Amino acid sequence: MLLSGGGLKATLQVAIAAALVLLFSTIVAGRAAAVEYDPEPAFCKQAIVPAPASPFARMPKLHQPSKNGRIGFGPSHLRLWSTPHVLVGKNLVGFTLGLEQRQGLSLPWTAKVTIVEVNAKGHPTGKPRRMIRRVGWLKPPFGDAFQFVVPEDPAFYRATILLTGASGQKLGKFSSYTRVVEPTAAARLVLNASTYQPESTVFMRVDNPGDLTVVYGVNYRVEKLEGDTWVTAPESPRGPTILIAYASLPGSSGRCMQFQAPGTMASGTYRIAKEVRFTFPFPPPLTKPIAPAPKATLTAEFQVVP
Image (cartoon, rainbow, N blue to C red; front, side, top):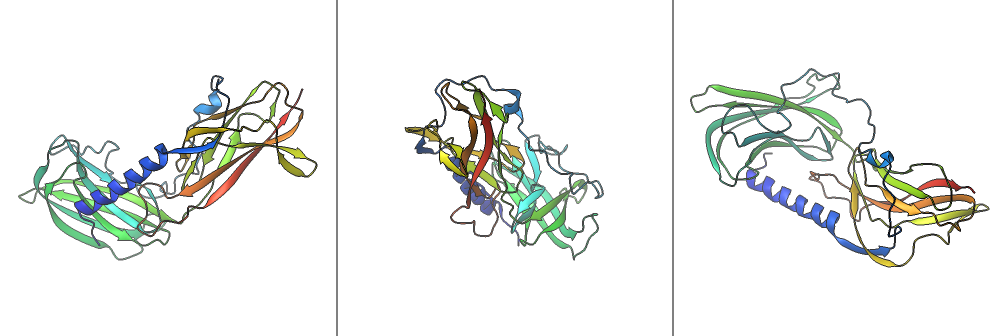
């Protein structure tokens, strides 16, 4: 199945609008931190969660589109993008010819696109699927998509696009690997230390080693261990305020948040408890998203000492 440029544009617009609403919507929640913040330590500058070695390392190297989309021929504002290397669930795999200008563009080119399922070593395991189509008119900014629908079953794919000119001359050939994975909801709350003194600052962040996006507000609870039971500590933030929702993308860490331990905080074992939700990353899968978004409560323990 081929997705047209208009279909891709509509899909992207919906996804982008949903992401903007999610990331910048205002919510009412408990007060999350003191008004005055301490300078952030180096802990807060760790933006990427360590990931395992790339599964594509054992596969043959490909001539891939550049990260900025430039292809080295044709109009300077023309861009070629491949789909992300990792997709969740049933999705689209292939390429997009887009524009970095407001005006449209007509190209007398032909695109020959092939996709084939491969194994972990990059060897084909299935029957290739092919399409041949004239490029024609590209409408900014998304242009036109040359993509195939792939099932939600975990698999590797190799997509190749050959662009030829009006007289049939070869202009350029590019390939890219894509891996389809099952949704993995994984997140952890990390503190910058395990022991604090009263009047010190606890810095925290949400790390996301999974395949789904983690969304959350800045609200959290501080709990104290009383015997075998966790109870809400007197120092836990309270009171209504206006907060913004944040997100930790797959393989990334979210922005740092702070809890200022008051000088009267008693010694003992404490933890930060924070509720998060999981949603699909961009681009979203073609299958119906999980509704409602699954949620979890992340916790991280620390000690308060004199």
